[in-house]
Image 1: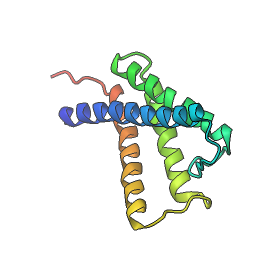
Image 2: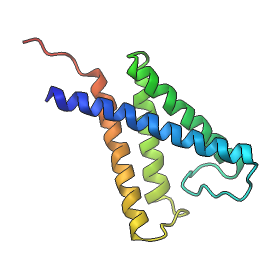
Image 3: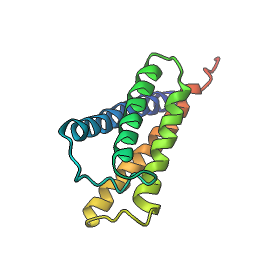
Image 4: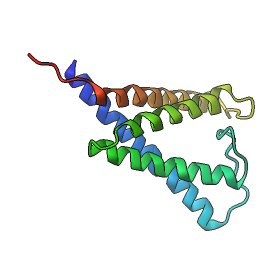
Length: 134
């Protein structure tokens, strides 16, 4: 059981780091290029440049939370980031009436990615597991 908890904890850190790097990279490329024809329909609460800056800030928070959790400092930030990311993915992809999948393959991919985000949330909770005395 301890091995599974360690595996989930490191999965959570890796998932948060990679999703943070991806979001930061996408936002920076769009900001640097000055693109105005992007659509971020899966970001439910913001439109236009506000959505772009929200993705950038969320990505930077993901990177920061993963690094701090790996260093065992401010571990609660990883839990907060993981639940926010999973919540945004569930709402943005599956609940929001705005976002539409282009086909079954995209829906399946987003379902697996969202399942990974939920798993990362549970993995982030494993940081607070009490060591057993035996």
